[in-house]
Image (cartoon, rainbow, N blue to C red; front, side, top):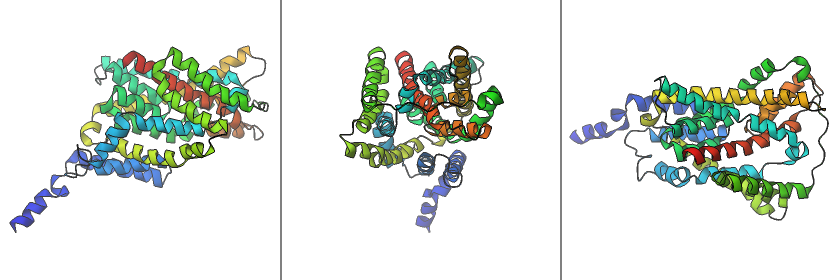
Length: 376
């Protein structure tokens, strides 16, 4: 009987704390959203399951010696997993729309305003005494505004590892909610006439241009901002493998097998940071709030930049593609196309929106480099 009592006392149920129970419920909610609502299922499913595992009392999955601890240390703390994800994204990216209409680079740049505005907002909340964010914390939170999960994780792992779980969940949640968050902002800031603007077909971009461009971007950015080289370098390397046409096997591996493997490990590693000790606090609510504001501001500034550009250029740009300046690829571009079709059923904006969408990926990497250079 004593042994049976000891077994009960050592069970997870006997040692379950309220905070751990809450986090397990949050993990189940993430799994539900991934399966039932299909919100970023490739990431939310492993993150949710990792959250369940790390909060099981006595299992020690996230403690030194546990599987999730090693996954997190090797892949996330080191920054390896986000960089490999960026390589895979680069291998799946087409710079053609951006090269065909270089003006859209400004839309991607404008959408990054949400990142820097959120840093100011985080420090303001700290000055009001609502939260206690350091400059490093504020910089890591601000990257959520770029709607780029791997970049958010990479910067958080360097500047604010204790906030990584909340930042990652916020970044991927808002990426998944792009179809719900962006359309009201886009319609609020544009007129019916502006949404009906039809854009001409893009020119054909040569293979030589597509090969030279990633090398040129890497050289120009890395020489001036070396801290952006890891993210941008892996992104450009993946893209060069795709566009060169001589390493199809490597490009295919980066796009599929390696990308899928790293995604699983990344999700579980992020889930390991979702323990009750790190997640259940006032700062987490602040991160979720600031992340939403950052994403909304980034969407708005992209649209407003397109409207401003139309004042100075002869051939107008449909302002809806400005919202694709956030780097949620390709979902933000699809939303721009969908809202455009609602205003004009002959207005196909998808390829035009891919220009600022790709520019947003580059912009978020540059913004991350600035944050790491100033606050790292």
